[in-house]
Amino acid sequence: MNRWSTARLIVASALAGLALVACSSETDDAGHGVQAGQVEKVSPEKISGGSKAELGLPTGVLTVKVVPAMDEVASDAGDLKPRDGVTLVGLAWTLKLHPSSDGRDVLLDDQTLESLPMPSFSLLDGNKKVSLPAEAPSQWYRGLVVGAKNPSVLQVEYDGVTQSVDLETGVVEGDQGAQLKDLESASTTLDRRCPADAFKPKEAALTHECGVRAVHVLPYVAGSGWAPNGQTWVVVDADIEGQATVRIGQDTGRELASPSDAVHRFAFAAPNLPAEVTFDFGSGISPVSVGLSSS
Image 1 (cartoon, rainbow, N blue to C red):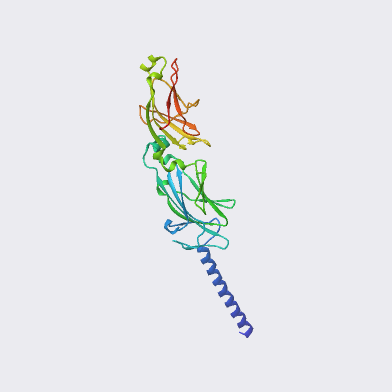
Image 2: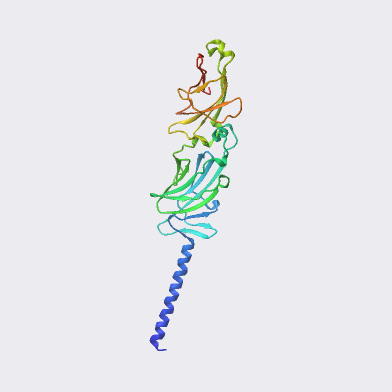
């Protein structure tokens, strides 16, 4: 072999070695570098710092931790790092189911928790949405890192209504589920009877009776969905002896599953808690009203 052949062999060997190093480095980067739109599961404990937010959902209270930018996150696949031009967003959330209460019973309207719709999660990256995986409510203890170029908010959509968490501040926008953060406060016991002297003619009081046992104010009722914009569901538990139409204003509402044989439950859409509910027995009997104020 002449010296030129030997030189070419040395150069070729050197180039092959460089190519092997470059290939190994690229494989290593691909194994650990997170690109835009890439979602990786991590232990929730690895998402540290940032801010927290609470969202009320029909299924429970969702606590979300958001970290707008992370340098590195350990995972089963190794240390995850953002690629050039990419921000690594850290997310962790857990769901605490609503405890048993009158408010929860009204919200479910005789349905099971498993029959309620599932929420969906996404990260808004500029004009793009990055869909995030979600599991059954009982398994919601999740940590994720997401690669994004211009991330802004985490969006949680439930049955057509979206609540958003600002990544920088943790502020919740579109907070339709605020009333669902404490279902125990959604119900007020009244136990108010229709006064007998309100019936005209007076003889009607001998065969007719009515009253309001409780009132519940909720933004969501299973089967009815979210209350219309600017309104809430006002659910009235009523006692009725005789045949009566129950009204709030001119609205006859929607009858829900009854909690017992002695109670009729009606849901009305209203901008706030109305002053009274009216029982209209017809047949020449004057309508009878019961105040709904808790005072």
